Length: 279
Image 1 (cartoon, one colour):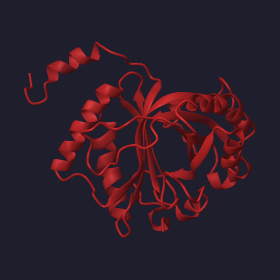
Image 2 (spheres, helix red, strand yellow; image 1 turned 90 degrees about the vertical axis):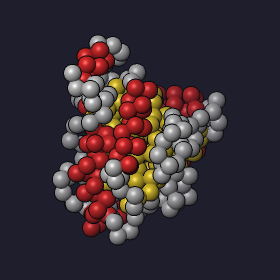
Image 3 (cartoon, helix red, strand yellow; image 1 turned 90 degrees about the horizontal axis):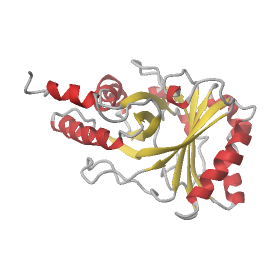
């Protein structure tokens, strides 16, 4: 028995609790490296933090990084966003799936490991968390029904682009109505015939009180929905007509306000591709 790692406990933990593959929860984090530190941030995140601070953790079973070069940043809207100020802030986005029913277990580990990484000097400080939240999965809407990858494949399938959309309902009570409208009317219409294969819909949860101090508390937990659009083409190729005017349609429905529509392309792991195109 190894007293330092408590190996005997692993056998007990493996025999209890949920262990499905459904993405019941997610970590979605959009970060802005400070000017002049883009290369250092990218290498720290890819070479260390993506693994030690995410993928090596229990119940976090899939992850992927995305990046927005300057030309993609300039496609974002609305200009006055409650999420990003300025709206171009947050050029890197990472998304991770967490096994359904394992959020609390994962959070106990992630808070502890991040405190350890911080103590050991393995946290890159020259960055700003623009939009970081653990989220509960609400729905997935598919373009092709039962054909094609499922949502639990989304972070492993080689999608060519991603669009982050953040929508705030007008009230806590209206978020359910907004969700129903998105899933039954708005998203199927936009997906039909588009290069977007699916949209996953999440609602943010408050971060624990013992989170790291450089991560601000989540806003809009009672009213917000977070959408991830997974694209089979570079977002530049399909921006029209799929993503233009999303804010107008939500406003016309009278159910809320679009606070951010932001396109990304996948990073190339182990490289600094796109880093010189961020500014």
